[in-house]
Length: 150
Image (cartoon, rainbow, N blue to C red; front, side, top):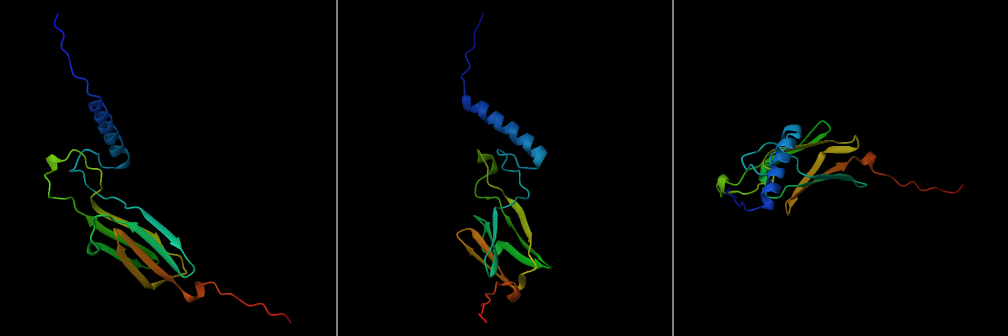
């Protein structure tokens, strides 16, 4: 009887589990598989939206994207931020061990409140974060009314 010794590699089992989970979630939620650099499609960057007394602010994380590759538009009461992050061609796909960053087209849209002045929109880009500020109409700004004694 011949016994063959096989070297146990715990990471091989973990990678296999991760691949299976990637395939499962990829079919269910249309996510890309974590170990396939060729898997590209749409993605959604993280976005925060908040309001101050005089404006509505949206901040979107876009690391690795040039400001010229981002489009900001307002139509009716919808603010849309879209663009595309290209997969790096500096390294051959077969040389990658893992690809977790998302690539391809993205688009985020938010409905602005009636208090937004869509004629006054400013966008700036700093350290991979896009900031879009939409001014509020004058009537929407809170006014302090002085109470007089009679």
